[in-house]
Image (cartoon, rainbow, N blue to C red; front, side, top):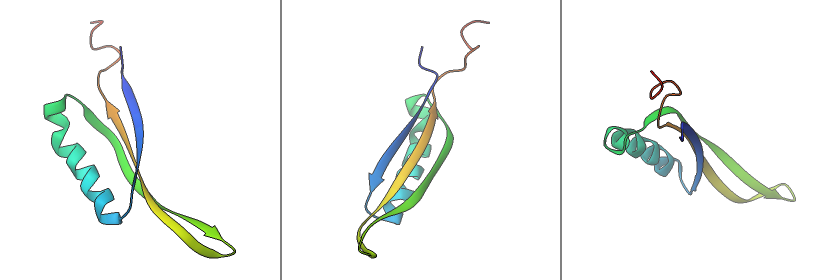
Length: 72
C-alpha cells in the first residue's frame, strides 16, 4: 500500500510555483491525499559566472494513507 510520495516539478516562474502548490492544496480533499509539506526553490545554471538558465523547483509531499489506518 502506498503511504506517501514526494514529487518534484520544474516550472519557469515563481508565480507558477505558488499557483501549483495552491492547486494541489485545493484538490487534496477531492483526490484523497493530504499535503504534508510543500515548497519551492529557485535554481540557476551558470557558465563562466553568468546565469544561462533558471528554474523554480516545486517539491510536494503527499500522504495517501496512514501506516496503521487499515490495521486497526
